[in-house]
Structures are given as structure tokens and as C-alpha cells.
Image 1 (cartoon, rainbow over the protein chains, first blue to last red):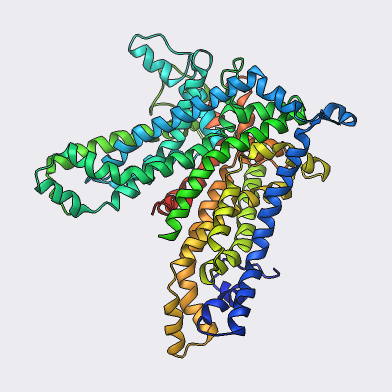
Image 2 (spheres, chains in turn purple, green):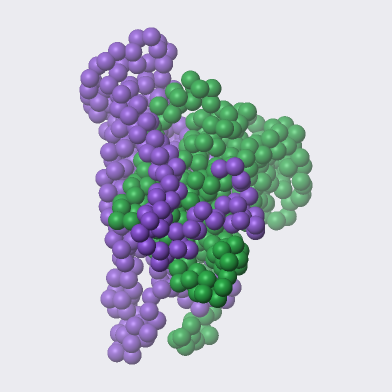
Length: 320
Length: 276
């Protein structure tokens, strides 16, 4: 690729003629079609090759390392130990604790974002004056980088003495909560839920807006109340977007890292260590390459279980 | 609105929506306010909402003490570079799958999607060791490369869903009318492809700008983008809230603007076309 003006207005003259060719000769027969297919394959090859290498090489290395006893501080001593790392990782109390933390974090954030996202989307679907501005305010947290949201919440809002929450608690005569010592996991959950609530709301709102207005009107004419319209018409319509929200959020939430990295560092103790953070600390703090690799593979397996369902749903949509 | 909305209904829902919107937005607003306070005011209890001594010195301090611009430039290079390279690789691929699909196109697309499902932490160890051995740790090249690969599946998917919507018939029609290939490209294809390209570009720029796993693990100082720079505020000494707020405000402001412009494409891009 010698030319790079991909985005300038004059772009196609450089980059598109070759790509456009298949579309321009849709009716050609014989050799033309074969040429077209050959061209199409050539255009596809770089992307497929890169992604293939990206998938196979690191994963292969992870599998290889997971079978070694290999510490970076003592790198001469790598030796083959079979499945020993998996045995250690899976029976390590830290693994069970972090697996539980991961499930609590993912489950709570999913629950919060969906249970709050549905009423919020319904509200934004109402006739609201200045709806576009409200929309902007609601979507904003999603664009805040994780390190910023974590540090702003930790300091400006959740600080046990000078944070805004402490002051609000004081107003009501309640003792302020020392969030990151007393309920560290809850604090992380609130921060992450704040970041993902906009995502859930926006997707549910998009789905609501495609809901057939006439169907709702017909139901109302037939005497259906607001509640039964919601239960029998709106909620079934939301089933698919809710599933999509659950699957996509799960993929990202399984590997929440920065929020923990800058606030608690996994502590106190192991209270906020999730699988991603556990593997990170094994790899880059304890330099245990073998153990971290075994843990990494466990994380890959867990993510794949979720991915399996997501890919099926998206795939079904592709045919429609 | 097809249904009749009573004015009371509008008033109630408007009030509720603005209240909830304000609450959700509040942490960001609070941060922006704190960035204009002195450190003492930022720390004050009871908190000072609007009536405090407004100052811009935090912004100057952040640049002087920590070379903010250096990290901002890194963020632009890393996010922009990885997005542009991903587009260069993805445009031909998405174009070929959208306009010349084969029996296997669907499988290829789903396979690409599945590579995005791999948790980054699963390959942290080999990537870290490869980067160490090739001297890529804490380099912009290294970050551009990894973020480009990480976002490539999303870029291809987004472009694919946009390209697929360009009607093929319209090209034939243009030809019948005697348009040459170059005219076809300039006047027919480009206008239809540009909106999709633009929103793909924006969304991926946002994702790369905010990426905080690889940037935190693979860069420390020289190549550190804003995510890492902000993380350095996690263990400071003394009063730092106002400065943290100023640095944070600068770090998210450009993305907030871009994000607000591309919010409608966001749903489609992040759900791989499963919700439109």
C-alpha cells in the first residue's frame, strides 16, 4: 500500500478502483467472474492473515509457556512440567476468590445496567423537551477513559473525608462510608456500572425506537393498560437487545482491569482481584510466566463460553 | 410522536429525564468544576459548588510539571495511527466481502468477530515477552501495532455492514447512463461510502483513545498515552484533586466531542449490526 490518502475526498482515485472492480462487473461471465473472485480473495488476504497470526501465535505461545516452570527472574531455568501450572492455578485459593469476584462484578454490573437501563430508555423514549441534550448527558460516561472515571470517583466522590458522598451522608446524619476499605467491591461495581449504563440505555433506546408504534396503539385501543402493553409488547421486543447487551458487556466486563489497577490494586487482600488482575499480577509482579499463562488460558476458556452464544446470535442476524 | 401527548405527560417526563440525565452527567461536571478550583477549594467540606475562586492555574501546572502535551501527542499518534492502519487493511477486506461474497464469507466474518472475544489478558505473557525481546516495550510503534490488531475485527465489521447497504443496482444504472468508471467512483460510490468510513474512523479512534489494558501494561513513560499519564495520579502525594481534574478534563474533552457526534453510529458499531 503505497498511497495513503484514504480519507481525503480524492481517496477513491487512489484506493478504490481495484476494490470496486468486482461490483462494477457483476454481469460478466466465465473468466471475469473467476478474476473477480481472485481479486476479492486477494483483497481479503491481508486482513485474514494478520488476524490469523494475531490469534495463533500468542495463543500458541501461551499454551507453550503454560506447560513450563518459567520465572522471568530466573529465565535460564525454564523446564517442562506438564499440567502442573494448571493444577497450581486452579487449586490456588486466590483463583477461587478471583473467580468469585469476577462473577460478582460481571453479574452486578449487568444487573444494574439492565435494570436501570430499561426504565431510563423508556423515559428517554417519551416526549421530552430537549431530548437531544439529555441524551448527550446520559451517553457521556461511556466516552470517559477508564483511568479517569476510576480516579475521579475514588477521590472527588468516594473519599471518606472530603468526597461529595461523605458530605451527603453527613447531611443526613449518617456516618460516611469508607468505600475502598469497607466495601471495595461495591465501589468498583458502582464505577464500572456508571461507565456501562449509557451503553445499555443507548442500545435499548435504539431498539425501542424501532418498535412499531401502531402495534402499541392498537393494544391501547383494545383497552390494554400501560403495564400490560409493557409486559406483552415492549418487553418481548426488548428480549433480543437485552441479550446482546448481556453478551457484549460480559465480554468487556470479564477483563475489567484499569479501574482496579488505579484504585485498589486488587486489595484489600484479594477483595477486588478479578481473574484479569490476578493474571496480571502473576505475570508482571511475580514474573511467574508459567502460572500466568495457565491462568490466561483459563480466562480464554471462560470468555469463549460467552463468545459462543454471542457469535450465534450475530450469525443468525447476518442471514436475515 | 404519533400518539397524543398531554402537556402534563410532557412536563413530568421532561422533568424526570433532565433530573436523571443531570445525575448521570454529574461526576463529569463535578470534575470540570474542580479543575477550576484551587486545591484547597477542591478539598473543602462543605463542597463549593459555584462560588469559589475560579482559576486556570491547574491547567498551566499540569503542562509544566508533567509535560501533558507529550502524552496528549502520544494519544493522538497511537489512536490515530492504529485507526488509520486498521482502515487501510480493513477497507479492501470489507469491500470484497460486501460486494463479492462467497459461501464462506459468513464464516470468515464470524471468525473475525471471535478473535475480538479473546481476552487480552490471555495473551499478556507472550505479547509482553515478544515486546521485550524486540525492544517494543514503551514504544509508539508497539502500541499502534497492538491497538490496530485489537480493533481490526470491529473495523472490518463496521465497514462491512455499511458497504453492504450500498445498492449494487445503482452502479449499473450509472453505467447505463454512460458514466465512466472514474466518474462512477467519484460521484456515485464515494458519497455513499464516506459516511460509513467516517463513523468507523471516529468510533475506533474513541476506542483506541480510551484503551487501558495494553497501554497500561506495555508503556510507562516515553510512549505513555493519556490513559497511563492519568493513572500516574493514583499514588501521588499532597493535594492533587484540582490538578487531577484539570488533566482529566483535557484528556476526555476531545473524545467527548467526537463521541457526541458519533453516538448514533455507536450502537451499530458496537453490536456488530445486531441492533440497528
